[in-house]
Length: 215
Length: 258
Ligand SMILES: Nc1ncnc2c1ncn2[C@@H]1O[C@H](COP(=O)(O)OP(=O)(O)OP(=O)(O)O)[C@@H](O)[C@H]1O
Ligand SMILES: [Mg+2]
Image (cartoon, rainbow over all chains, first blue to last red; front, side, top):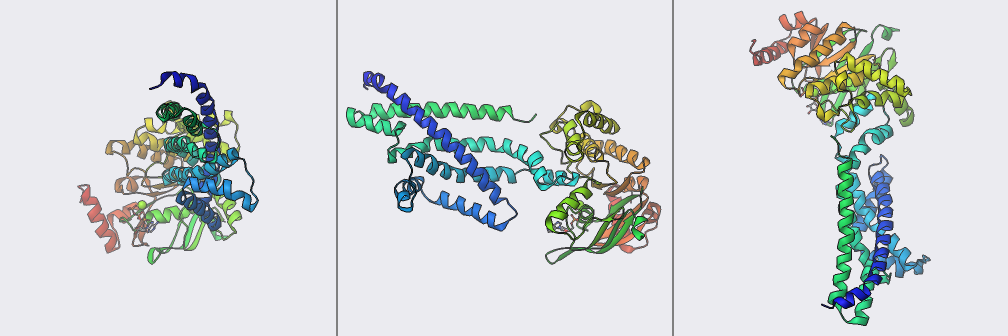
């Protein structure tokens, strides 16, 4: 193993890792927004919203994220959508992970005991008040860990944008392999950095989960 | 108007789930301050009837009135939501499984709805929590969470939560059925206290002794109809109907009193 080479190139990898972090944060935020909207739509009392929510979830979960990304980036200009590779990466992967997060959130919401909503409604709370004061706070606690699984998948999923030449960790590793012919060292370095980011995130999620746990 | 006499009135209540008729034209009324027990075999429609009073389960037909106002009015969705939320504030309900809010302290369980719906101040809310929890003997647990309470304590907090809305009537659906036997009495005591305060109550129960000692009237339901109703002494000692006798024979003998 060429340790000298690793020591020489790692600052570039750190810089690329920051792009991966940036992509992760943006796609996860977009995913949370899309997920919350889709979960709300799927639980709506209006059939049309339920249909739209369900369609979003099944289409995005039924198409490889890479195909969706290519469709957006390469196919977009054909229908008048011009996006930079970075923008396409954030939007494509964010909308994609949102479909999984929608199911996570919906699952947490419907697993709150039905008696909770009944008790709230019996006191005179509206549907919305019951949701905000009683259902959501309990569902939020239930969804932290499963959302952590989605987040973990999404951080690793950012590697896909290497295929549209966003200069993040995976793309950087590939580029250095081209000039150094040392794939073992380069992928090892990239892998170690992914592991670091994911471990740290996992710790953060576990901390959050402990912090909001009920007595 | 006739309904000013009848505090709670159910007129020709019908309820079906698909082809299953759960309530078959039930009419009954409860006077102000009256305490009525509903007894009957499992599946006879007791919970369905009780839950129809605050429209938690909507009737397929018939009317429910409270203090001169129809609860299950026919209105557009939005108007109905407003109407029913206002009506439900006047109807307290206590469930078999307590349904306390696990993410709120005992204090917040009691004050959340009054704060949200009546806009009372934090100071008034605190006074209300103290008053209501003191009433059910749970004041020293005001900072606890539901998971830190016994079943009997949970149910007493649930009663305080319902009372904090100052309801006109209290509905109990087998409030003691999920409790360990030794915890039943503390909840019964609270209900007896409410009876002494002349709270209007409709109590679905399997406890015949409690019904006999606390209630003014007993209603025996079977198969979605009221089979028999009357004063506890009459229904329990001299039931007129064979179905009532059969039920009581079975039920009282379970408790070794046959
Ligand atoms: N949501 C529902 N869908 C279909 N059937 C229902 C529903 N809720 C209740 N039922 C049926 O209605 C009948 C009456 O139920 P209900 O809960 O009112 O009985 P109950 O007298 O309260 O019985 P228990 O003493 O067991 O609580 C039962 O046959 C029950 O299976
Ligand atoms: Mg029942």
